[in-house]
Amino acid sequence: MLFLHGDVSDRRIADAAVAAAVERFGKLDVLVNNASVSRQKPFEEQTDDDWNLAMDTGLYATRNFMLAALPELKRAGGGSVINFGSGAGLDGQPNQASYAAAKEAIRGLSRVTANEWAPHDIRVNVVCPMALTAGVSAWAEARPEQYAQSAAKVPLGRFGDPGRDVAPVVAFLASDDAQYMTGQTLMADGGAIKLR
Image (tube, rainbow, N blue to C red; front, side):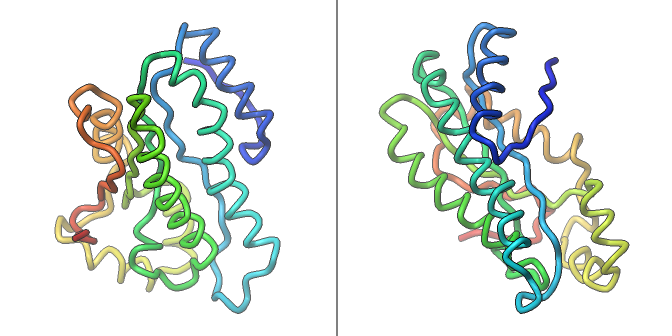
């Protein structure tokens, strides 16, 4: 395991992280973009700083790491990029305009790069989880009614566990078992949203 402390919105951090991973593990053939910070409040109350926070740590961080990883993914002869989206964007979750916008932008970026990078055998997919992370726990505490409404929409009856319910989906997309999948959004959300 390897840890690097830094601001994911800084392209230099993405370059350093990729270089450190290649030095430690010999190559890079999987990239998972899961960083994101946002502030939940009604759209009209969100400031430029709120929007910049969501876009910098979500969309721009994803872009930075994808650009940093691309030469190494090509050098490895292909690989898998797994970006995290969110049901907040698909469902239009109130109080999450900047976060939802950043996550939907990531889905759009993922579809474009899935097409552009396919000739290099690089697959790009999206996972939209509904998991009880520390951030979701804080949101549930701050907005218990909204949390209860979201939880009630889950046919499997609970928010997922990040390790048990979401990580296996990511591992699948990273594996050769998903070698014929690209440009897709997989919902790891207990059935809350059914894409068509």
